[in-house]
Length: 495
Image (cartoon, rainbow, N blue to C red; front, top):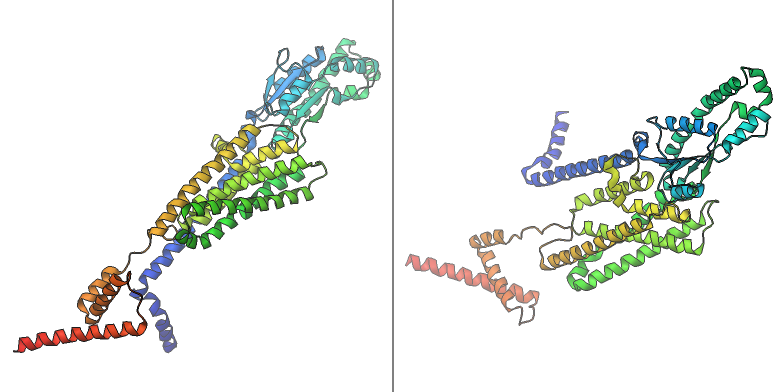
């Protein structure tokens, strides 16, 4: 057993020898860098993904609803007072009352405001509500409770956030149905001399039990099956395949270009290949989207080219951004930077910057968010139109990263050509010229070799390179001369 233990020690001992200390330190440093980078990547990604969609109800008052009463009856005024009081709940959206105002003086104007994104929704007390309710309660006329109030919504603004906001508004309206029914019944009984039986007999049952309810008018249905596929899969696919693959291809073959081709040609060739590859991938992605589109959307040729342009602009922005990273960032941070960029953009596309902490307003500048805004407008034929803002932001990002990548590629190409930088964005190791000179000063053989090499280097520009046999002969003659010189010195000293 002791012998086996010693044998194991002999095998492990070389790993802890002083000669391998540099290797051990480099390995430990690499593990630490990997742990540090991916810990930061993990927490940054989780913070953005979790924070962008965290506790929307905390910011529910940032969403506004338009309220207008188009009926001047007493029942409508009583219902309006109850609705306004109900929306004062901290878990309800902010209700802005425009009853009697010149602004939003028609149902069409209110729907247009919601369509354009000026409000998250609207609550409308419809004209004629009081008269129809009175006839139903006093004469037993037919009555439809949902004709009393219209809740206008627009889902294309953002599916997840709109669901939360609309649910909060519907909760308020649903909670008012019972109290309003009791109020109306008490008024009917008081007006009829406290004869509840006669009130029940003459009234329409629907009007008596549910004097008001609401109907939802979604002016821009959200194509969930289509849009979520685009935002969560297609944009990410274009970013990964359309941006990462060409950048890594250049990383492996760019050294010969940097050393043998002019810088302007390198930049032009990279831009040409990147654009062609991005267009090729985006055409495929657009084709996949059109092949598997949902039943609620009937795409046209215009939609195909519009979606292709959105994908292409988004992909080129990331292609030039990754070019900047590869020509500026140290290699150990590249993969972490890729993942962080991807997750931040996914958070912006899926959850958006609205109804969030003010810190997440930076997501307005993220390309995925703006690409999502453009796609929603396209899918709903113009709702929540932020095209000018979104397209401008993405075009600016593309131009900024293209100019930055052009400068960094030219800078790196010059440094690589001059020998001041390796392809991995790090300076080259120091040449061992000093150590060779020190050894040559104490070694006759090295002195002879350096003497020969220096003479060969000096004459290499005008004479052809000698053969291996010539080199060996010259080195032997140099050693012989050195030996003769040493011998003659000794003889002179003896004499």
